Image (cartoon, rainbow, N blue to C red):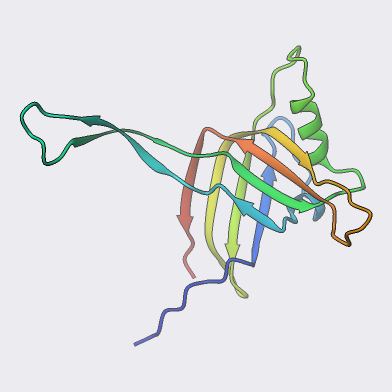
Length: 158
């Protein structure tokens, strides 16, 4: 019987896909992130109190909800399709429609893909650059927060 070991959370990649009409250039810069968070989902519910029943309340399910996807990476100081898209979306005057994309976050092992989360209709809603401090020797980090419509989790076969 084989022993199961959970995978490490340090080996992953992020892929931004373009629409069929506008291909997205795949670059190493736009797929390299030091941290991804916000891969959460929960079921919202209504709490109903029944008259005369004081021991408990009913929790009736409504719909799923999720936070924004948060991507962190070292500040990119060269041309980046992802940075250009974020700038065009967040700095938009809404004279042109927002261009949502599909994002894929893939958890990897040394040999193969383990799990792929696909985020559909994603677009940037917040872009933060870390503070600069002349007395600290840290890498400048940019954080990109994405809203999305839906997420699908797919476990890959070995």
